Length: 315
Image (cartoon, rainbow, N blue to C red; front, side, top):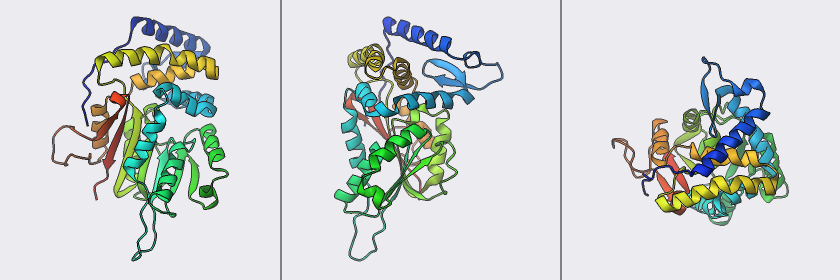
């Protein structure tokens, strides 16, 4: 595991592109979303500042727009490598429990947050079934967006997992999982979703609540900066220059892809996010509770384009 101390870098042409995009979006938005009252709490929506109560609906609009092109979106944003990252993410978690002759099969209960399309859930169930020979493990696919959940239902509609009752779908906000009992989940996963949450710390605290003692929180997310300064500059030029343009050509939706790129830039660094996970009450792998500061808890992928974060709820 490596710490990334590389400063952010964005070219002047890209910044001008950002400003143009923001102005264009503001012209299309109702006046109530352009101006924030002094007494309102604010947050970021990409590079824009919005009232907290508006962010969820704006994020929902983005993902309603990209739902049918979700895999294409991630292909564009990761140069296609997201499929390898997801495979590695699942292998590193090794979901499922191998049956033994001396014990009844029990399986795991997995909650996949912001997993509407079922991409991670399918991998989890495949691994549990084919690698660990576990036919009891089940996954709850949760997403705040009904269009994304619709894509997941279509993906699972003809699968044996659906027929066996090993997958279910739940429309919910990750910051308030009232439908999930406390200490009921073995494994909580979120892949490429948490950067869009309005209150990330609140979502982490909810993850802590629903997990059983000894349960694992695992997050796969893009990181704001690469470890190598030169490659970081190249990657930023690609991200901000090419991805929105390709989004416009492929999906006829430049604004959504512009936001998704900007949302990566606004996400905390690996060390900062690991600190947030620890603040929620989790133990970080490789670090004891008595250790001061944050020195571990994540794994960089492909020079730090993305990272896997983990936390364990104390037993």
